[in-house]
Image 1 (tube, rainbow over the protein chains, first blue to last red):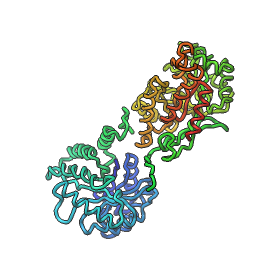
Image 2 (spheres, each protein chain N blue to C red):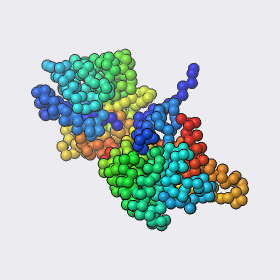
Image 3 (cartoon, rainbow over the protein chains, first blue to last red):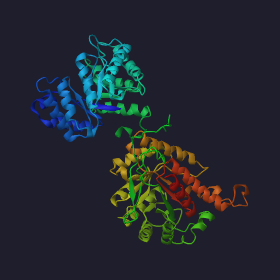
Length: 262
Length: 312
């Protein structure tokens, strides 16, 4: 499974302060720890960064790449900042991942950037207006996004369809709809489309103590349906143990008594 | 429309392991595709063949193979030189005489023999204990120290004694042969345990436990196939060590290599039949992915090397 390490996020106070003060250390520590724990991509979330977006993303990408040889998942709604990040990204460590486009017109330029920089891109199956009602609704949106990808010359294997995980505590039926969508997305193309989720949304609003339980059980169910990638905390050992166990049971990794240690 | 040959794409690669010191080192491994599929990947090194030498005379070997080495087998040093002359890539010294049920030779005697053999040949050396779990720990510790600097493959480390054997190999800069008994999961587990004690996985050679044609070779074949799939298709770092097959040991005790012409006339002449049995067992193990073979009959080794040359 492709693991997108979520720890470098503007939502975290420590990261927010580091970004504001241009202090590389907290970012670099989180990047190294996540890479060591098995992250495939390191997410670098700077938020909308309306004032100094391009300069901030350029700095963040460079400082992270000073310490890890991993591709980055560039996370901002600011198109100019995204482009600066793609320019700064060292593709020697792999192709960057844009986080994200959707079916909302203001997010179309992200797909254009994916074509221009030959980057991978997360596509939220979210259209203008209300949230998708069910898996079928998500597939309709996904098809429109894929068509747009073709227009911009983005190969289908570079698009990671995201069913948009909604919180289980207020929209309980949506949990299963997103799982169904993961299964159906794969059938939209041959070879199957890549899929991704922002996992922790599932437990938003739930008590702190149950959140990790909901998260990792939900991940197991998604993986069983063929999920290719997830934005998670790779420093969460229980979570990583779940990933390893599911991969082992599904025959993707060979069993050994110490399989959790590897 | 032109025919497009379907190709598998691989994400893993077998570690390259170098053995020996000085001018005649041998490197095995390095493949990034299933055995001999040259159109799918690269194979930088040929599988290597070691001829077996023992620290005692091969009294219990069947006539055919005993005769083939009879001129030299009275002394391990002469025997090792003979193997080199026969074109072996390596010499595999089996210290069977140290087994309590054999001559129960001491670890010091074994170490002396190993040092003498190492001094007599310049091709790389594989050094094997007798397979007695407790005795091997003493023997291999002494031997590893006696041939320090020769970059040998020392073994076999098994689940019951791997810590001591691996420590001896590690302390004296040798490579390690880690054996599990026809079980992919235990093979992986042993490699994990070795890495956890600090033995670099890139210095391990895996022995999946061999067998002879007609006597369970298909089990070894399946185990090796599964190991290679995990290594190359699933990119499992714990399964990417080269594989050694210790085949002479198994081949030269089955009926087909022993029964005289008169007893089994419909089987063909013993001399050719027995040699073919070892050569065909070798061919099976090579196609399953063996990077290294230990054989007994120089004639069978020549056949195996011929096959390797044809397939590479």
